Image (cartoon, rainbow, N blue to C red; front, side, top):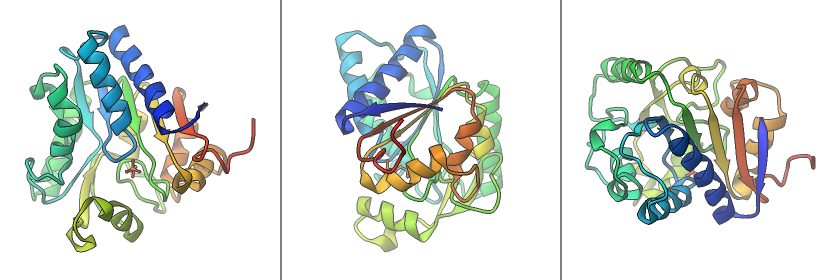
Length: 244
Ligand code: PGA
């Protein structure tokens, strides 16, 4: 793992956007694995600015998002389909037909997940996978467990994730209890992983990810075994890590 120290959220966002932009410049038809949540928003905003200046071009890029709430339609403002359009896709020149998010509106979990696995595999897996990290060490919605997950599957969200995500809903009861998520094994197939973290609430998870044992009780710890994983985290998120 390569750990890149950022000063604060905006520095983390710029550094992450630089890495993503370099990937798109090096391979204009690359496959990007993308993430939702608060953490990547600044990186998306930076990429939009560079797109507007003509510095980066998404015309040939295709994307696969990590996860989606089960039971939300694509145009539900709380869905990750909506989030991606609102925060990124509607502001760049990507072809929406080349953007993919698990189909949370399909109640048949088995069919929705196997179809998503088929599509990600057919695309050859991401050249670069962007990840956030949950306060509990989750990646995508791969929650702490007694085993690492494989392909896309339906998960019951943990109370801590429901609580963390309730800030984006009117009430905690409105947070969906299940999601479809890319599995840990699929995430590990990406040729490069870029995981970003900001703020004190992530400090323990970042320490466990980078310096703890590789264990499914901290799903992000598996990234220690990836041969090309870059962590970009700010001072607060790195505050519990040993000084290097
Ligand atoms: P956040 O979520 O970016 O909203 O903190 C990250 C995650 O849960 O993966």
